[in-house]
Amino acid sequence: MKQLNKVSIVLIILLGLFILYLLECKRAPECLKDGEMIIAESVWDEIKALADKPPEIQIDTFIIKGETVYIDHPVPIPVPDPADTTILVYSDTLNNDSINAWIDFRLRGELISLRWGYTPLTTEIIQETTIYVPQIVNNEVPVYKREIFLSGAVGGNVHSFTYGADVDYVNKKRNIYGFQYRRIQDDNFYMIKVGAKIQFRQ
Image 1: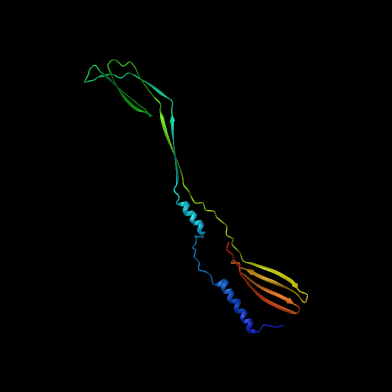
Image 2: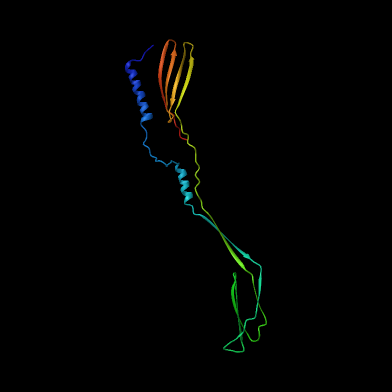
Protein backbone atom coordinates (compact mmCIF):
# COMPACT_ATOMS: atom_id res chain seq x y z
CA MET A 1 0.00 0.00 0.00
CA LYS A 2 1.33 3.40 -0.98
CA GLN A 3 2.19 5.63 1.96
CA LEU A 4 2.40 9.42 2.21
CA ASN A 5 5.84 10.94 2.37
CA LYS A 6 6.84 13.78 4.66
CA VAL A 7 6.39 16.47 2.00
CA SER A 8 2.82 15.36 1.32
CA ILE A 9 2.02 15.37 5.03
CA VAL A 10 3.40 18.91 5.39
CA LEU A 11 1.37 20.08 2.39
CA ILE A 12 -1.80 18.57 3.82
CA ILE A 13 -1.17 20.28 7.17
CA LEU A 14 -0.53 23.63 5.47
CA LEU A 15 -3.68 23.24 3.38
CA GLY A 16 -5.70 22.49 6.51
CA LEU A 17 -4.27 25.53 8.29
CA PHE A 18 -5.09 27.75 5.29
CA ILE A 19 -8.67 26.49 5.20
CA LEU A 20 -8.92 27.10 8.93
CA TYR A 21 -7.69 30.66 8.39
CA LEU A 22 -10.30 31.29 5.69
CA LEU A 23 -13.13 29.94 7.83
CA GLU A 24 -12.27 31.42 11.21
CA CYS A 25 -9.63 34.15 11.11
CA LYS A 26 -10.57 36.19 8.03
CA ARG A 27 -13.77 37.74 9.30
CA ALA A 28 -15.60 40.76 8.00
CA PRO A 29 -15.29 43.87 10.20
CA GLU A 30 -18.14 44.54 12.60
CA CYS A 31 -20.61 47.01 11.05
CA LEU A 32 -23.20 47.16 13.84
CA LYS A 33 -23.05 48.96 17.16
CA ASP A 34 -24.89 48.13 20.34
CA GLY A 35 -28.62 48.70 19.96
CA GLU A 36 -28.54 48.47 16.14
CA MET A 37 -30.06 45.81 13.94
CA ILE A 38 -30.28 44.76 10.31
CA ILE A 39 -33.61 44.55 8.46
CA ALA A 40 -34.52 43.69 4.91
CA GLU A 41 -34.57 46.60 2.46
CA SER A 42 -38.11 45.76 1.38
CA VAL A 43 -39.31 45.93 5.00
CA TRP A 44 -37.62 49.31 5.46
CA ASP A 45 -39.33 50.64 2.31
CA GLU A 46 -42.71 49.52 3.67
CA ILE A 47 -42.04 51.20 7.01
CA LYS A 48 -41.10 54.49 5.33
CA ALA A 49 -44.15 54.38 3.06
CA LEU A 50 -46.46 53.80 6.03
CA ALA A 51 -44.78 56.50 8.11
CA ASP A 52 -45.14 59.04 5.26
CA LYS A 53 -48.82 58.25 4.75
CA PRO A 54 -50.96 61.24 5.85
CA PRO A 55 -53.43 60.68 8.68
CA GLU A 56 -57.03 59.93 7.80
CA ILE A 57 -59.39 62.51 9.31
CA GLN A 58 -63.14 61.99 9.57
CA ILE A 59 -65.41 64.75 10.91
CA ASP A 60 -69.02 64.02 11.90
CA THR A 61 -71.47 66.81 12.81
CA PHE A 62 -74.58 66.17 14.88
CA ILE A 63 -77.32 68.72 15.63
CA ILE A 64 -79.13 67.92 18.85
CA LYS A 65 -82.58 69.50 19.23
CA GLY A 66 -83.98 70.08 22.69
CA GLU A 67 -87.52 70.60 23.94
CA THR A 68 -89.29 73.90 23.24
CA VAL A 69 -89.04 76.39 26.10
CA TYR A 70 -91.72 79.01 26.76
CA ILE A 71 -91.09 82.06 28.95
CA ASP A 72 -93.79 84.50 29.94
CA HIS A 73 -92.52 88.05 30.30
CA PRO A 74 -94.30 91.01 31.76
CA VAL A 75 -95.10 93.63 29.19
CA PRO A 76 -92.25 96.15 29.14
CA ILE A 77 -92.98 99.79 29.79
CA PRO A 78 -93.63 101.50 26.45
CA VAL A 79 -91.64 104.53 25.37
CA PRO A 80 -93.20 107.05 22.93
CA ASP A 81 -91.34 107.48 19.66
CA PRO A 82 -89.79 110.97 19.67
CA ALA A 83 -90.57 111.36 15.97
CA ASP A 84 -94.19 110.28 16.30
CA THR A 85 -95.79 110.25 19.74
CA THR A 86 -98.67 108.11 18.46
CA ILE A 87 -96.21 105.19 18.13
CA LEU A 88 -95.22 103.30 21.26
CA VAL A 89 -91.91 101.40 21.40
CA TYR A 90 -91.72 98.20 23.47
CA SER A 91 -88.16 96.80 23.91
CA ASP A 92 -87.41 93.43 25.49
CA THR A 93 -84.50 90.97 25.81
CA LEU A 94 -84.12 87.31 26.68
CA ASN A 95 -80.77 86.17 28.12
CA ASN A 96 -79.88 82.82 29.68
CA ASP A 97 -77.29 80.03 29.28
CA SER A 98 -78.54 79.00 25.83
CA ILE A 99 -79.96 82.12 24.20
CA ASN A 100 -79.35 85.85 23.87
CA ALA A 101 -82.16 87.59 21.99
CA TRP A 102 -83.73 91.05 21.84
CA ILE A 103 -86.67 92.57 20.06
CA ASP A 104 -88.32 95.97 19.56
CA PHE A 105 -92.08 96.37 19.01
CA ARG A 106 -93.32 99.57 17.39
CA LEU A 107 -97.07 99.85 17.35
CA ARG A 108 -99.93 102.26 17.67
CA GLY A 109 -101.94 101.07 20.56
CA GLU A 110 -101.29 98.95 23.67
CA LEU A 111 -99.33 95.64 23.85
CA ILE A 112 -101.49 93.23 25.81
CA SER A 113 -99.08 90.34 26.51
CA LEU A 114 -95.60 89.08 25.70
CA ARG A 115 -94.42 85.45 25.59
CA TRP A 116 -91.06 84.19 24.41
CA GLY A 117 -90.59 80.71 22.97
CA TYR A 118 -87.46 79.01 21.65
CA THR A 119 -86.05 75.57 20.92
CA PRO A 120 -82.40 75.11 22.04
CA LEU A 121 -80.10 73.55 19.40
CA THR A 122 -76.70 72.05 20.21
CA THR A 123 -74.12 71.33 17.52
CA GLU A 124 -71.71 68.51 18.36
CA ILE A 125 -68.67 68.02 16.14
CA ILE A 126 -66.77 64.76 16.46
CA GLN A 127 -63.38 64.42 14.78
CA GLU A 128 -61.72 61.05 14.42
CA THR A 129 -58.11 60.94 13.32
CA THR A 130 -56.51 57.68 12.18
CA ILE A 131 -52.73 57.78 12.33
CA TYR A 132 -50.87 54.93 10.67
CA VAL A 133 -48.06 53.56 12.80
CA PRO A 134 -45.63 50.93 11.49
CA GLN A 135 -45.92 47.68 13.36
CA ILE A 136 -42.67 45.82 13.84
CA VAL A 137 -42.89 42.05 13.97
CA ASN A 138 -39.91 40.38 15.57
CA ASN A 139 -38.63 37.25 13.88
CA GLU A 140 -36.44 35.08 15.98
CA VAL A 141 -32.92 34.55 14.66
CA PRO A 142 -31.39 31.23 15.66
CA VAL A 143 -28.29 31.53 17.81
CA TYR A 144 -26.08 28.52 17.42
CA LYS A 145 -23.98 27.09 20.22
CA ARG A 146 -20.77 25.15 20.15
CA GLU A 147 -21.38 21.39 19.92
CA ILE A 148 -19.33 18.21 19.93
CA PHE A 149 -20.53 15.03 18.22
CA LEU A 150 -19.22 11.50 18.55
CA SER A 151 -20.13 8.92 15.94
CA GLY A 152 -19.04 5.48 14.77
CA ALA A 153 -18.79 3.89 11.37
CA VAL A 154 -18.89 0.24 10.26
CA GLY A 155 -18.76 -1.01 6.67
CA GLY A 156 -16.69 -2.53 3.94
CA ASN A 157 -16.94 -4.56 0.76
CA VAL A 158 -16.43 -8.15 -0.35
CA HIS A 159 -12.68 -7.81 0.06
CA SER A 160 -12.24 -5.97 3.33
CA PHE A 161 -14.01 -4.86 6.49
CA THR A 162 -13.60 -1.43 8.10
CA TYR A 163 -14.72 0.29 11.23
CA GLY A 164 -13.87 3.53 13.00
CA ALA A 165 -14.98 6.52 15.02
CA ASP A 166 -15.47 10.23 14.38
CA VAL A 167 -15.28 13.23 16.71
CA ASP A 168 -16.72 16.45 15.27
CA TYR A 169 -16.68 19.94 16.72
CA VAL A 170 -19.27 22.46 15.40
CA ASN A 171 -18.74 26.11 16.27
CA LYS A 172 -21.19 29.04 16.35
CA LYS A 173 -20.61 29.75 12.68
CA ARG A 174 -21.68 26.18 11.88
CA ASN A 175 -18.22 25.23 10.69
CA ILE A 176 -17.17 21.65 11.34
CA TYR A 177 -13.78 20.40 12.49
CA GLY A 178 -13.40 16.70 12.99
CA PHE A 179 -11.06 13.80 13.56
CA GLN A 180 -11.64 10.44 11.91
CA TYR A 181 -10.17 7.07 12.69
CA ARG A 182 -10.55 4.09 10.33
CA ARG A 183 -9.29 0.54 10.65
CA ILE A 184 -9.02 -1.31 7.33
CA GLN A 185 -7.66 -4.82 7.63
CA ASP A 186 -4.35 -4.39 9.47
CA ASP A 187 -3.88 -0.68 8.73
CA ASN A 188 -4.95 2.33 10.79
CA PHE A 189 -5.98 5.59 9.11
CA TYR A 190 -6.16 8.96 10.84
CA MET A 191 -7.89 11.84 9.08
CA ILE A 192 -8.78 15.42 9.79
CA LYS A 193 -12.09 16.79 8.57
CA VAL A 194 -12.97 20.44 7.89
CA GLY A 195 -16.38 21.54 6.61
CA ALA A 196 -18.63 24.58 6.23
CA LYS A 197 -22.35 25.03 5.63
CA ILE A 198 -23.37 25.77 2.06
CA GLN A 199 -25.85 28.63 2.02
CA PHE A 200 -28.32 28.76 -0.85
CA ARG A 201 -30.31 31.86 -1.71
CA GLN A 202 -34.06 31.61 -1.20
